Length: 223
Image (cartoon, rainbow, N blue to C red; front, side, top):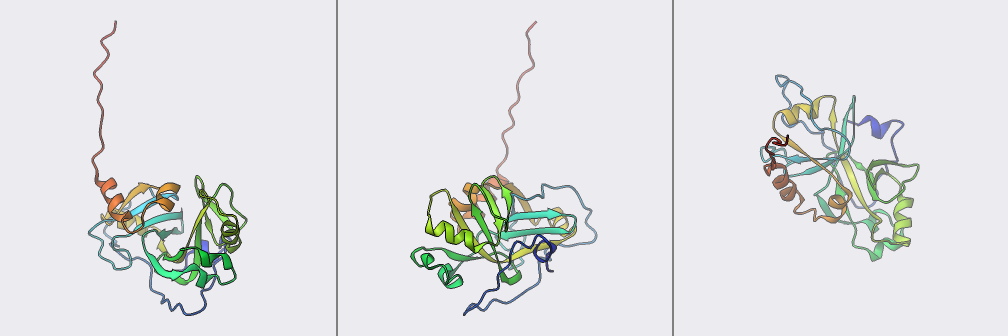
C-alpha cells in the first residue's frame, strides 16, 4: 500500500536510492488483521512508539519499535527505529562530502516503498520539506538539512535516514492492537536519537509491561 501522505501534497520529498543498494519491495503489515475484531480507541497518534508484542511473529515487524509519524482517516505511517543497516550514508548521499567523516548509517524504516527515503531531524526549526512530529523532532525528506548539520555540527542537532516505511490502511492498526500485537509508549527526542537501537525493543517492552504505581491517599479528617 502506497501511503497517501507520501504520494499526495504532504509527500515531503521521497528520494530514489541509486548505486549498489538492492532493496526489494514487500507488502505492508497484515499481522493480526481479523474482521471479527471490533475497533476500539487506542493511543494512536504521531509521536507515539508502537512496540511489537512477542506474539507478533511477522518477520517484517518482529521485535520492532515503530515511531508513528502520521495518523488519520486514511491510515497510519511510521518508521521502524531499531533496524540499522551497514550501509553508510556517505554512499547514499555522495554529494555531501562531509558524511565521509561520520559513522551515520542507513536505517530500515519499513516494508513499504523501500526505494524511497524518509528522514528524522532533531532540531529547533524544520524546513518547507519537513513537518513537526513532536517537540524538537521533524520528519520529511530534506538532504539540504543533512548537509547543513554535517557542515555545522552541534550536539543537539541530529538526523537519521530511513529507506521504506511502515504503513497501515484505515482501521488496520486498530485491529492489530486490539489483537494484542502492539503496545503504545510515548516517544521523545532523547529516546529516538540517544538510546541504543539494538536494545530499544527490550527497553520499551519492559517499560510497556511494568506495572504502574498507584498512590492512594486517606480521606481528609480535618474539620
